[in-house]
Length: 129
Image: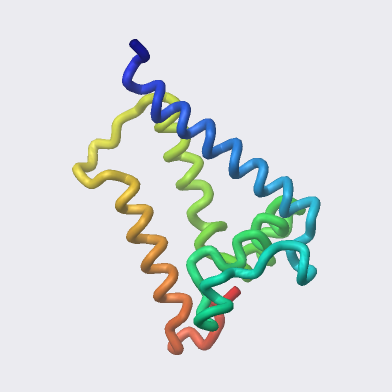
């Protein structure tokens, strides 16, 4: 029987591999040029920016060392990427969260809040991709 913490560690490594693959594809494919990647279906249907809109462009900019440009495309990704890295380290090392709230729910709440906030007219498109 496998140890209990091998599953979260395996999922963390899988997630890191997927992020590395997407970052590599974005860095080599230049998503700033239209037609290289599919458009966001949510944005195409509603005209609103989903929480992930601008992520590929932000990853492209980060891969090329342009942090300010990446912030312009998806500030949520840039700000929370270090926190995601810490969460990844906790999963890989088997550290347990002292919180009663499952970290996945906290991340989901933050992503939903970002999706709503970036579409509010108050910000006038400043947070749009």
